[in-house]
Length: 212
Image (cartoon, rainbow, N blue to C red; front, side, top):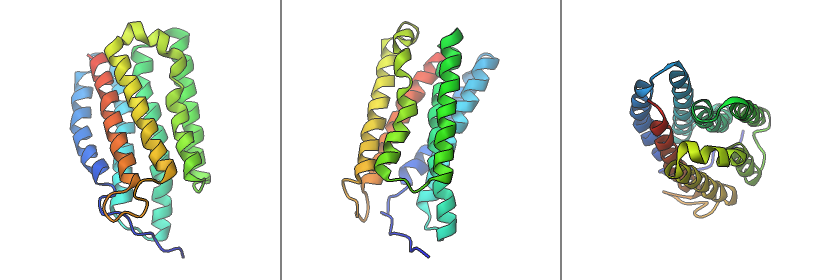
């Protein structure tokens, strides 16, 4: 059996902390919901975010036996797609209207489903390729930006773009496995996690502003 590589000591700590912060923040978000559509969209979003952070922390904080590590690794990568689609869901249901909203919602969850299947059945793709695939569903929002600008406002659009840029930078570090590929404390993967945490915070701010 393959021996587990030694993880940096801080692997998973940021997502563990962010999970508990998000648990409180998402509770406030759901409580702020004013109607059924808002409740549904914020619950889906919250479950996606908490799943991604929780599975990531559970997977990365512990040194697992090979079989458990393989299973949790597949779940960890799958949860990323759930989080991405979940983040887009409130924006779609609460901001985009009619055909645009329906098209985007179906498209984003379809791509997420493909990503989940990829993570389950083809978990060993090169990390550079995986990093690119992670970005595809997030950038599917670009054709709708012109429609979102008058509805979200420039502040939220700026947060949306900034979050996307941070996710992209994090994915680049993840794909390149730099810096600190063999770091004892903090390496490229920890840096990727930090970028994810900050980007997720920016997108939470958007969703919180459109609920209620």
